[in-house]
Image (tube, rainbow, N blue to C red):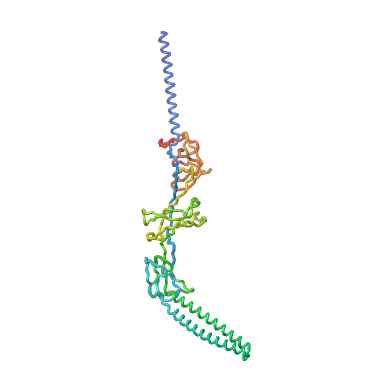
Length: 373
């Protein structure tokens, strides 16, 4: 009976222990499940260490190195035109000829006036010489001699004025031939045979031709203010054009505005691209790639990891299964990604697409375990 009593007591103790242990295990499992259900599920990424050379691509507009309209310098009727759109011309080549009958008649009249003035001048010189000789013999008075010399001076002035008028009309007549001011390509012809050409100050002049010199193209790029300090005159850039897909050209940063445009907050930069064969067309759309010096210790993260809080820019970093809001400083903004100057290292686990309700110290559960450092 004593042995049976002892065995019964031991059995009861074992039953109590097993019951308490199973209850404790169940309670611990329930607590663990509750904590896991409270922890938000997140995906994380690791910041990328920047490469040695960074670059940005910006849109640009290609223009001819020299682009000018051609106007007539004299009035008349268009007698002939020798070039059309697409024609390549040389400097001083005749583009068109203008008939100027009015100018021709004015020139003939001016030449006749000049001959008349020259004849009067010759007579005045002879008269003045005679009066000087007679004055020496005291045959005429000093007043008469002075009048003869004054008349000679007036006749010389008339001759000079007539010669200037002849030169003016001769130059105006030379404008009957419209010449190319430089080597280039005709991109527009806005006149035809018999058209009335008005070149006066009282009328609105009409453009006859449009001439461009495209042996070199100017590519204008608006560089954001954050990259302006990296622009150096003389640096090489890579330029591509939509019209020539797959081809890449080298340009040289020739000049920049030297000031930030207050309206767009950009720096106007010009890159010159050689175009000896004329394959590049002015007015086209271009893409210019600039090389930028990297920032030491800088990392790159996607833009969808940023949190804009009242206290400043933050990213959510997972440390010991809890969220830590880390302040960062942005360098270059690439649109889909940003360069972080300070605050992160490549070993940090940054939450991707964090919710606005995510708070500092909140427990989280990483869904992609392979991203754990």
